[in-house]
Length: 128
Image 1: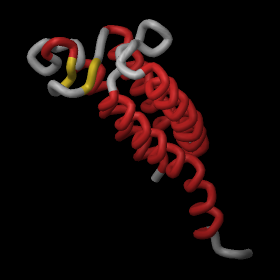
Image 2 (image 1 turned 180 degrees about the vertical axis):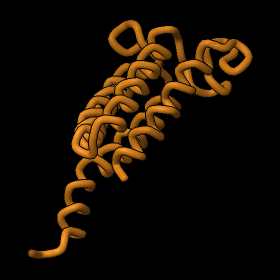
Image 3 (image 1 turned 30 degrees about the vertical axis):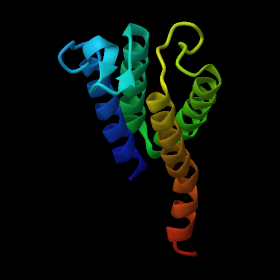
Image 4 (image 1 turned 60 degrees about the vertical axis):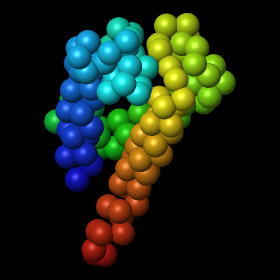
């Protein structure tokens, strides 16, 4: 299940990364007119998507680790976004409050998947 979710996340992030480069979908560097993106932001989405796909193809353990690390990183990105407001994160990755809200949601879901996956596996494993 975690592998499938990693593949799904990966496909969505690759798609979002590509769409961020298309002016009709990201007018004035605002994906769907809402989320502030730039080339660095799009590159992060593409890289995240590629890593998610690789982990999803590798193993359940790799997918679980991806979600754990990804959730922590996106949580930190959300905190940096809150602190910086509409200024670029680390001076290079575009940001606005819509991005922050989405990053919080993505971090929460990722952490739930990453840390909940092992517990679900233990609970579902029959006793010997």
